[in-house]
Length: 253
Image (cartoon, rainbow, N blue to C red; front, side, top):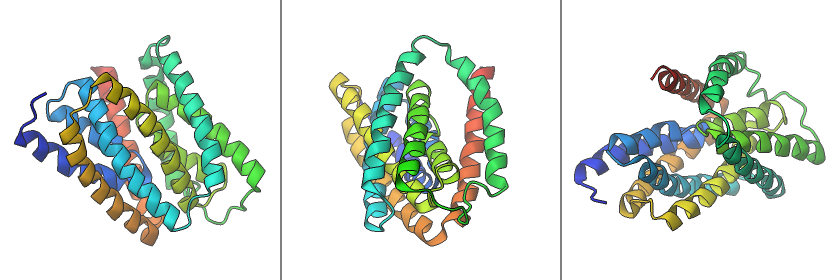
């Protein structure tokens, strides 16, 4: 398909911003996917091309978190298997159920999630960490459930993963973010392969935007390592607010 200079000017800065947000708090897709749609790409091309830039940026974020020692790869591998299984099941469910039902549920869940973050429970570093087996069990269960959501609907998956892994599985915020990146990278690559095989990708635009995504993720992980919860909390609240507006608009439309 024909891509002009205007599309690059629209997509690339927004993908940089999405990469920054995603590396800190998840939810970058709430910015990057609308950017491709705003640039005039058909829906399937927008989703497929977004997977290119997202996978490139998430790979860099994952590498930086790993190099900083924030990823337990045994934990990450276990959670990823369950996330992929959940995603496949969620995609099947999506074919059977009207997604408006899920959107109505999200309108109730999102304010409760925001309240949970504001009260400070999500990033409490004083919680006693669980042993490996218990953490893996909780993390894998969470990954399966949120993976189902990802396959069914999708937006904000990384944000929910970070919240559940830190708040319920008692992972440190840095570790929860690192594991979330491993899961996101795996699901992005799996989806990217499907879209590559279908030919629904604007390759040059995706690769160019991917460079901006890499830059955004690099800057975001650097900011997160320095600021931790202080920077994650307001960005996560913004992501949830954007998500709430998106769901409400879709239901009203």
